[in-house]
Amino acid sequence: MKIELHPIGYVRSPYRERGDAPRQGRLSDTVSEIVVDPAYEEGLFRVGEKAHLFVLCWFDRADRGRLRVTPPKNPVEHGVFATRSPDRPNPVSISVVDLLGIEGRILSVRGLDALDGTPVIDIKPFAPDIDVPGGDEKKGEE
Image 1: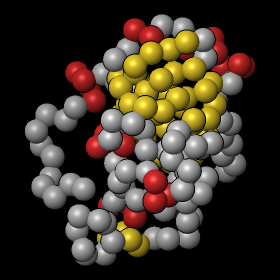
Image 2 (image 1 turned 45 degrees about the horizontal axis):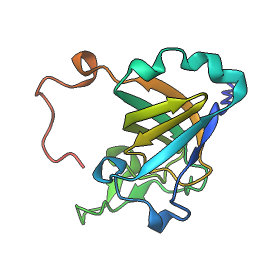
Image 3 (image 1 turned 60 degrees about the vertical axis):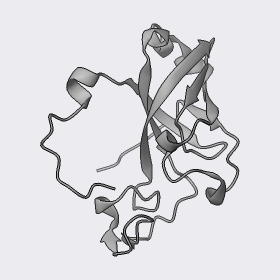
């Protein structure tokens, strides 16, 4: 099976190196931009009506060979699939961002932890009625 991803744009961010980015984007008030490729601009139709978006990025500077990590708030080693570590076999990130504005094909967002130049692979609307679990979460989430 062959899987192909085509970036739809890239991130403009003040974060240049991994140590610059916050542990989680939602913990920061930093504003970033998502620059959508002109070929996909039509796909932004009515995105400006949304308050929050899911942004999926390809963390191109991640370590794809790591399968175990130690989360910052839990000093016990975990498999990468039990964490939000950027280091993983397929470094797809998912962030919920606040949409602050849109001008043409540039989205201003808050809550993104991606480094400058990170490829964006998709944008989806956040819908609280279906995207917020109903209280059955397990304890100890990172």
